[in-house]
Length: 126
Ligand SMILES: [Mg+2]
Image 1 (tube, rainbow, N blue to C red):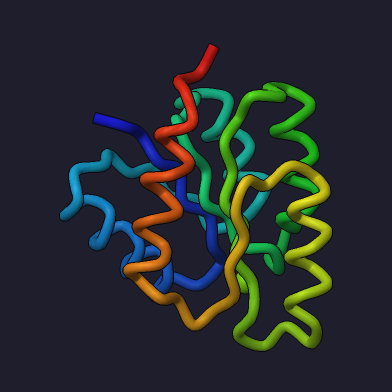
Image 2: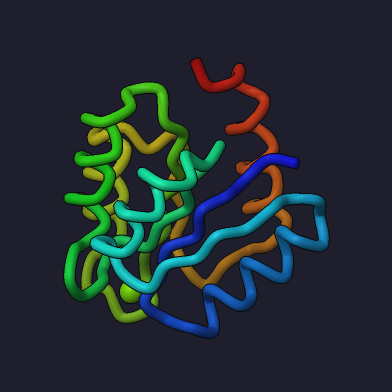
């Protein structure tokens, strides 16, 4: 069962994504900010990380950079919006930092599921 790490400071988003992905056969670990997310990444080594970009403690862009430094093959999906002044700018930066896929909130669940499937189909972790 592929393991997915979900990082978002909004509890409602964590619950929504966890429920959706568990229902579709993924095992889930969640964190509420980038610092906690990075610790969980190191201990769980998830097959895929889905992270929000604007969060307290440590923001998503910094988190993506740290994960990619630790594991250049890590698969990451970045999401933003919902109060962000310029979600597109953040999402473009996230892609430049190594996120395979990006999307803006509100979350389109079908689109997200296809992103997850695509990201995980792109070969296994080394
Ligand atoms: Mg946020």
